[in-house]
Length: 357
View (cartoon, rainbow, N blue to C red):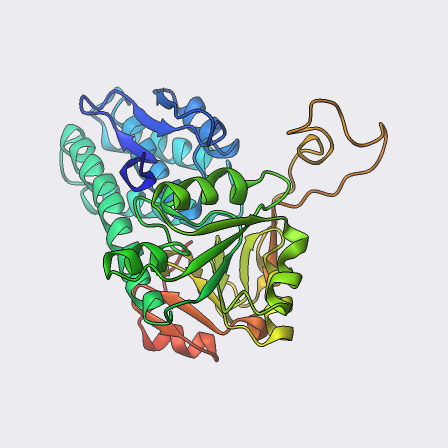
């Protein structure tokens, strides 16, 4: 099985449900969930059955189109009010994932732009917009991959953290896109090191799974082994994804990313963030303004173990993300081009200034 052939999120052909690849079961089980209710869409996002900022955006677009299609009214104002209630509910599922808000806001703008149309026609327009979000995401990832590929040299050792792969997007991924594009260009003389990414092991369960299935030379390492790999010269470049980027370039990504950036700076290894422009939030100036989700203690104390591995009563701190300071980032790769510091200026020069309000 090649992971590039898997679909993270699709709207069913009869448009009765979302078909979501349950990533909590990978790599052992490949199972597609058929999700119909808004509560189940919320649950799929919150509990990481679908994860990765771009894939969450795709899921949100499809999800709000599906639930809006079931609003039983022909009155525009009633339809809009119910839509906004559904939107607010879905937006509360993952506070750090800016693509979630971006996709929902885009769907709202689409609805409002066609307020003079009959409600049934608006519903069809929303379905078309959701499909456009998915199609655009695949094209964005490919563009990021082409730019990232240009930074690679034959024989490079690549380190990546968490999963910003095809499983986190519509296709190709962000941080993994340069690797897939390298294969398309006939470059196979490179190797990838995947941090396991505690506590949910997205690197071990997801990134290693998809890269191995694509035939890429892949080595899994524990998070605390990255320093040794860099010091020994086995890592030449780092690609990571992101969930949100502030105007100054501060970047929120899976917990542990900032530590990798510190190590890369110490050993003189270029550290690149692969960021669709939809993840760049110009409404916040620094990473201090990015809300960081804190998750359940059980993810640290007992998940993945046959028996609880920590003493009862011990305190647990389990933030899902950390923020990498922009000073530690060599460059931010968007589909519009490679940005280097000062990032706010670079974003504006590329026309990146999306409003998420």
